[in-house]
Image 1 (cartoon, rainbow over the protein chains, first blue to last red):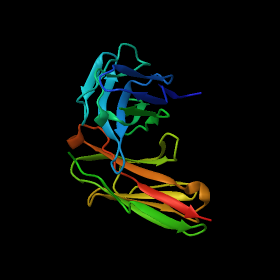
Image 2: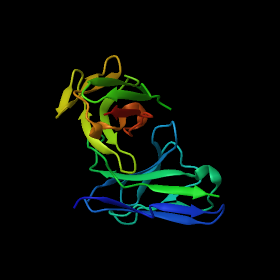
Image 3: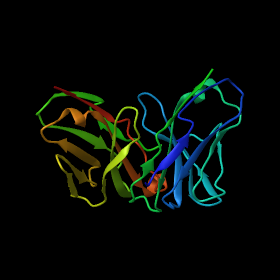
Image 4: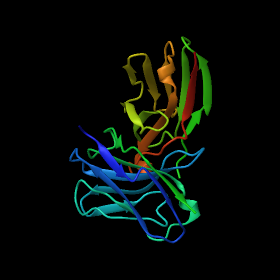
Length: 113
Length: 113
């Protein structure tokens, strides 16, 4: 089954404790992206990757890091989480080209205390 | 940052009634517009991708139109059913956004039985 898998689904952590949210897709998509969703706002792009070893900042990259060492995986790293990073995070992937639909993971709800 | 507006923010509709809502976006250098359906506790799923001025797409009881010259798209739902309850997201992509999708905050549709 074609899917984007995010883990964990829920995470409660404390300020400053490094964490990683994993994202994996099995559709051989070149493009992957991370978004955060906050109440009243649209999805905001954090980082995206056009292919292996190619990553670019989105609209809200501060406080986040990503890597794309393999085509299928695109982890999101919070080196020193802060309460303002409490949010719902989505990973997505698609074939290259903005005319192609995006497939989303199930989301990770993160709370930073 | 490009602004995408969806209206209304939320909408209560009686089962069986038809409804529509709007996505407004900057029309310059338009490339594509996506519509997604997002049910609570699930991941967003693609409905349509539209690229040409005057495009009309249909999927069952749901249809969408696109006006790229004036920068808006309408989503229509005919004969609303309880399973249509969801948040509907639109996301245009353009050269101005570096071909990244810019997401509206969504229209939350609630169908009353």
